[in-house]
Image (tube, rainbow, N blue to C red; front, side, top):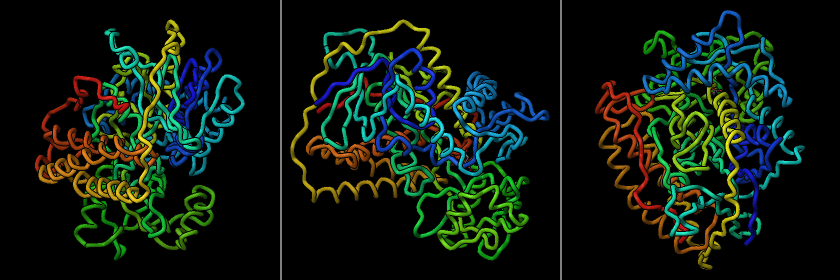
Length: 532
Ligand code: SIN
């Protein structure tokens, strides 16, 4: 076992983690942990872009209003104001870090009343990931540790049970995937930027490591989590037997793409005046309804109206991917289905990312700041990562430095037992959770379905706990443990919300009931952190 110490420890190397490290590094030593490689993040998969008021015809008020409308009464207005008004400065940060964003070339996505999406072709996230990764790799004050899977947070009280002061986070146990040892990382400030939890669902647009690790770790350590019922389903992921999670960006519908059924009939206008560019939750539900009605495995997105050369110049990555699967979107509609895309809830934080636990911060998709409310406006998420990176780093740099890295936590003890045959059971449990979440806690929910999911998850959670306690840990077990917890908290949040609102739709309460409050989950009274 090794012990590593730094001023700041950031778990996650997507946009929130990288931007925060670059802001802190001039004054602090920063360690960044990547679960696999540095570029394996949800950011790398983001296609559309970043919303920011740039055009003369646009205004902050309009962007704020669109965000509030999408959020369906649950946004924290202060968070919305703060993030939207910071956008032009944060775009400048990106340009300073080497990103190529053209302030004049703006696209449009669902729910925006103006063209205000800055982008890099159709792979904005991958471009930003590359640009910021280069900056981080060249910074002498930043060290990246790849293949480092954070297991659980370490609190002062665990190290010294006589310490009855307010809980504070001092570090984290980390599985080194190469040595298979569990190391200890200590830091004065610990920042969770682990991204989302799309892998809780069978179909997702997220990368394979989006298993809600930050939400699960924070909850186990005693922080509140909130609004997990608001998992946003993106209406259009590529449907192909060899492609499980490739997104077909909303920017395509922004250019007039039409959703059609298998017979070629455009169906969205019969549901919503904005047709295929209606808000994302409505489009996803309509596609779900059309597929259930016809029994079809997908619907189609028709882009064949665009002039020659437009697709190649504006959507090169999507075009190339479709061509790999034999779909020429210039000539033929793309088969699409909805998939879990973005977690609007998360660890409860203030506008600087401060959680309930001192010296523990959560940023980006891991956090619930209230920006998104009950439904996120497209392309507000990369913006939130940047705004929170700014707020969090300012708060840390303006606070007194704590010497939390002087603690001496106990070594990780784990049973040596590893039963390779049992790995198949782990994979079955993975499938079981993701399938039941898709079937019972998906786009359209009901009380009966939610209770069914709740009962099944109780058993699964117990089995996962047994595996976690009895076998030598392995990344698959750790991810299973996290998706099982996030799935179960999602069901509890969904059961608490006795109405339909934003992206949470329950057939038993089909309308809003004026319950404009967040669902908040307090962790169990005593620290639940399981060292063993
Ligand atoms: C997309 O490109 O459709 C995704 C944009 C987003 O989710 O913000």
